[in-house]
Length: 465
Image 1 (cartoon, rainbow, N blue to C red):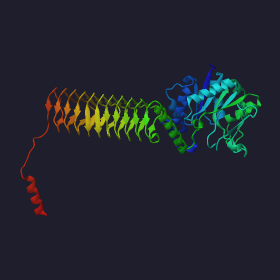
Image 2 (image 1 turned 180 degrees about the vertical axis):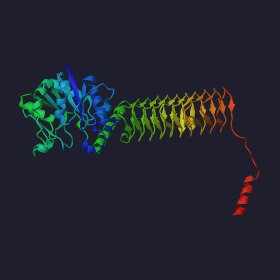
Image 3 (image 1 turned 45 degrees about the horizontal axis):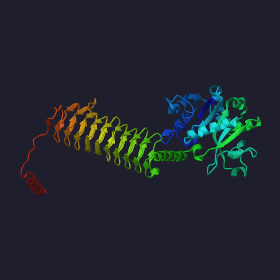
Image 4 (image 1 turned 180 degrees about the horizontal axis):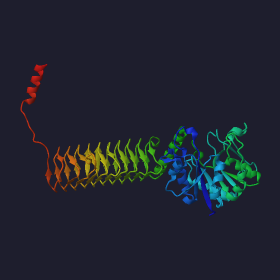
């Protein structure tokens, strides 16, 4: 394969967004705009063949691709897309060809990038332009093809320069190009900033190369939506909806049922096994991984969470940074905080909060419990209202509970404390010392009953009134 590089333009300010955050860091579909484009490019070339041009808040923008292995090229003074490629010339001139992508076009698919690359090589073109025919081409430059050679470009005309007849042309310039490096850099110095913005536009290379007798080809994208960018928050949310619908469809193609996908929020990198059912108004975020034959009921939010096969998540759960085994039942209204590991067949119910705790296979905490910084064995029953007191105001300590233990309702376990295997804790107890295996621990004051006390009190109160 001919040596090929990819250059991603990501130096712009995005002033029309009216936010302080760099445009490339705005998220759609669960990832920054730039990261979507980088990830698509990584499926075509190696990371070290990807060059990201950064300018506005460059150090912040780099964070969107941190750890990926791509290269960064500074464009300290932003003077247009042509100027950006001039900054990239020392880095990419050694490649026979390179392709440019826009960092704010997150819907671009690897298949489209590969298709443009292959078309460019097959056409032996100096420049290849990716085009599209959106329903409304208003605001975009139009591509005029040669009448005697329809695969070639005659010129690209910007929106403000269109004649009345040219405005009827629906084919737009998508701002994504492939170039033969040697030919481009032989002519890129001919770009002129003769426009209102005083910038050098890469678009103008089409006319420059045509005048030089070079071949400029055009390829229409199969889906116009994937080449569109966003200049406002409203447009960005339209891209977000499109990305999430694409993700839902990808999952459904793999055997996942997604009811009312337009109501779900599913990030791009979420994976779900077949025969799992996702009900309306569910959010699956980050690196969440869900096994086969699970069911996620409405209004639950899962972030960076792993679910084993056959697990049920009932309504209104909030699960973050946790791992849940096979055949478990969670919720409704359970909150799993980071570091929680829930075993196979375990049950966690109404308003149970778990933090940094390991709950063993087939253990249960079905009602109104707080389990923090605990190691709980298998087949343990945790009653309603049980709490582990893991923080003394200075340090956090752990509670350990052996297999088969029974913790009665409203028990308070003061960490650090250990409950032995098969032990039994009486309801309402405050446990401050370790409990041996198979022992009963009860800590409560003796019950006092005073016959007739309540009647006497009511009589006294009535007389006082």
